[in-house]
Length: 553
Ligand SMILES: Cc1cc2nc3c(=O)[nH]c(=O)nc-3n(C[C@H](O)[C@H](O)[C@H](O)COP(=O)(O)OP(=O)(O)OC[C@H]3O[C@@H](n4cnc5c(N)ncnc54)[C@H](O)[C@@H]3O)c2cc1C
Image (cartoon, rainbow, N blue to C red; front, side):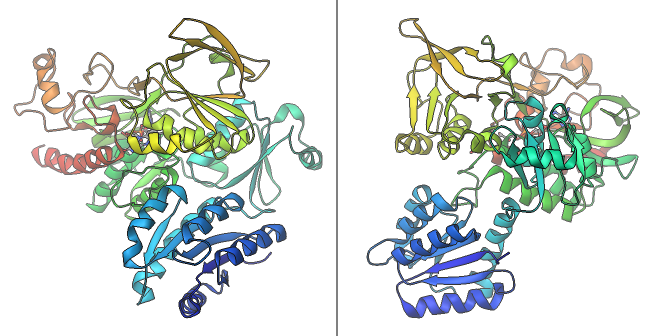
């Protein structure tokens, strides 16, 4: 197979030669560097690569070129290679144009000229972007393959697990891809055994659950120690931050997640407001970085492994895991965040995983290429989901009860939605039902203006409304508010049962729950800000507070 291509575009022959020279000096072993002297030539090259079945890893284009501007070249190359990383080369005076191009061309980075010395200004950026590309991209004939029915909830569960665990795989729908039947016959898998996961060595797992998949992929699901300094339950942004700080400060740290690292943020197609990522960052990329960082610093991660209960014994917290094992810890962090509540409309429950998906826009979007999908919800997560789905589906409708998006969605997303022709808004409308034979075929909508019902053809409903805290596993000693969010610090002291439950001679520390030494961070906490940055901040705080607690005991 040919090496993946790095394409560099500039109308100035000297700059083009310098970029080509620098890229070749470092990447020639793994990549082929190709150059083009204009936007038209670059797009012709991109089309040729596609027709040859070659992979394009990155396009680096100068902004100011006669004929076609760099951001246009980048935007157009996206149609054929959506995963290729896009870098705009700008003079200092063009930085505003580059910032504007972030949304239109889905820019991954803008690089100022000159980039000398490349070891400082060019290679670290390109290394990072190529690492991210490698993590997502899968060469045609290789790697892990999942074969199943699009409308099977089991297929969805495995897809969701693999995607959240950042494991590249190829999805083969038995109904859409004729060659899969031959493949199944060759490995001796019957229709009732689907979904099936096929490994590169020819072995298969028939209708596996995520735990079996994790084990088969060599992920450890056993804790290395019996006792820890800090156990963190939930590996969303709050849990991952606590793991990074805990491990870096020398605590014996264990992180557990019932699904995979990333949490809600992991399902986001593009987080635009997290500090330090001017071009935005996908949830999976942020997770990949945080998870690698936590592991490098020495934190242990077990997933998928659910914590089902916790008891307190002489100051130690004993956590019961879904497989019946018990782990003891001096301090713990509750970072189990929130989950979408089941939508109450008739037909939703029986179609969940078969056309109704909770939040899973990034996992399922490619399966809805050329189809019609509806989104329930008007928050930022719904807006991001709509933008992502619009890259694949022919028609995306956002259904909201309110008469505008202003109160619930950030302006940058409202602007992006307005500019996207295949997204429509259905204001003052409610999802009243889902119908279909084995999968979603029709959705019933009620207008809140006149109460009239309409049934419309649709292939999927993505639900982004109604969240609840994931706190069912906590004992009653951990006080919660009326909605189930965990009370900490000052809010805890204001709760009526506080004096009956809190028996320490000191006041609770900030983020400390009604169980001394058990802290809560992120969305699960009463009064949380529901942002990636605040969850990360609280996760980091927990570690400092855990030290304080251990010094007191
Ligand atoms: C689609 C989407 C887009 C978003 N976009 C943005 C954005 O652009 N900017 C922004 O700032 N915020 C955004 N948010 C909000 C942000 O993602 C959340 O505020 C943040 O993820 C909260 O982090 P957390 O660690 O507290 O909890 P979560 O992210 O909810 O993670 C909790 C984790 O705990 C695990 N867990 C739960 N129960 C158990 C158990 N019993 N045992 C083991 N593990 C368990 C779950 O599997 C999960 O992985 C978005 C949210 C969504 C859904």
